Length: 266
Image (cartoon, rainbow, N blue to C red):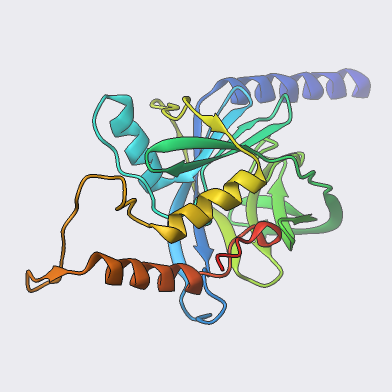
């Protein structure tokens, strides 16, 4: 009788997992991160969303998701400036494929993430919200990370590039406390979409060149149509001075998530 009961329970879990993976879910995370080591008190807080269906997922900032939604219905969506501070990631869990999308000058560059996640699952457990979570550790991007995952949500995925644990990652933070992602909400999603399918594949060396191109001319002023910059009083500002100010800001944002691919702008 015990064996029959165990078999029924295993079948139930299998059916539950199949049902969950076939559904569209949106996992909303609160992300906190420091882009400057010189200004540790400056912490950015963003809402980021992991859309998941059939072992395929897209992780992006809520702003990027809104922008994709506009693009998907043939309207103009905005895009985030900079190269090192973009969080847009596509994952194919079944085929172990992770791709980062960098949008620069309205072109989408696909950067394959080949760095392996060699997770160390630890016995320590604790409750996070209503979920029983277990601890795991991994190294990625030149950072050591501590994650908490739960098998009560049978999705071996998580925020940003992180995946591969036997349950959803509901919290993860690097050892320096520079970057953290914490699950705050789960929604059944009906408007799951992928608007960034036309891409140009690059590697980390070309990623570095993109960053330096952005630094040299943040607004593409040499080739784009003439843009006039004005101050709050309506006075026209010198474009070269604007570029110098932008470059100063870029140099101050010296704490990217992938420290091992940090761009040396000078």
